[in-house]
Length: 164
Image (tube, rainbow, N blue to C red; front, side):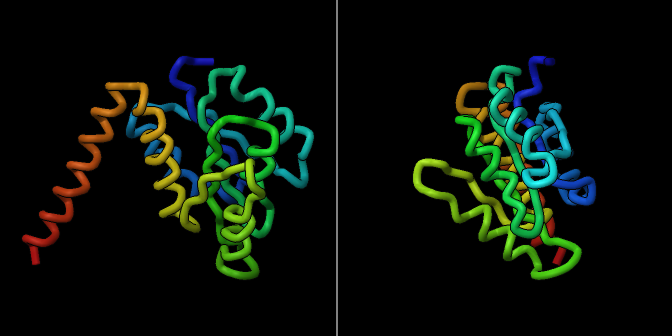
């Protein structure tokens, strides 16, 4: 596995890709080429189990897991890996607007944490930025990119404000 494959982005279904593309793209903006997989905690539990249990051995440092409905992919990853797991709840095509996924991501038993992000695209982007923040603790170049990103965000707001 390439050296910069430090983050895995896993999702429960290919229908999650339009939302999770925002996460993947944000990681790439920081120079991180993620491992991207479609793994279902319920339809392919053996694959989910194997992936989570072996991720650290491949050089992955963080797993971002996204799923809709109450399919708790992030929890399945956390159950089998001691890596930091970042959960992104997604809205399903049918049913509540992601609240079910949010609750199943947030409500983890003591000792099996999942860092839970917002529902949908905002959560997908924040998952990428949070992963970068974690990795930047031991990577000065990534820390500098993160500082530049924050300055860029600030500047965009200032420009929008002055355009009013």
